[in-house]
Length: 212
Image (tube, rainbow, N blue to C red; front, side, top):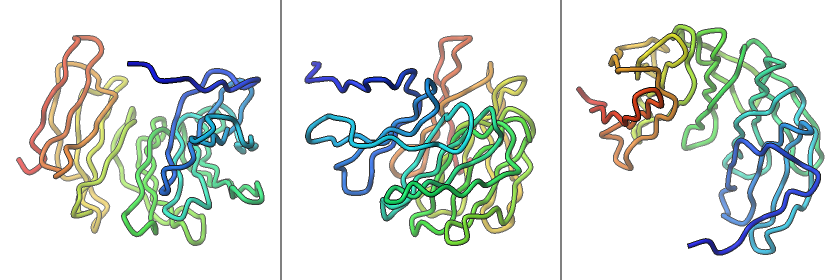
């Protein structure tokens, strides 16, 4: 049942959400105006809004310390690293149409999908710079990392109809599973054994064995 709601005030079209490691704060991307909005989850109120460093902020993620946020700015083709204390921005370019992202458990690498580049960009969180890429083909969108951190699992939509896998060590795609339509969501089961892909065109959810 519904237990409450949070007003964003002057910020509209919320898209991406991320809860910080302490569980006390929520970050929301606002597409009108372009902003990152920080919410106190105890009071359910807006604490602060940040410049998101680009156009059309899509997905967002806290770093492991809760000190920085990474926002995918889809229309300006950059990932913005935003310092949540100072508001300072580091713009990381080279990723066209950035979408979803996932952090390693130690927080040292951030993998972000680049829909229009057809790659996954590897970002070093210490230097806030791109240090590698994985070629995937156009339409890559959501991404996750297996619990052993050996395999990236991601959906390829648009003209594609796949859930695909890449080896973290070699930065090479290792396989694909073709679906009945273009997927968007791609979460993993807690143990990393299965991936789930939602295909809106056919009203179906596919269950994929990651090991097979």
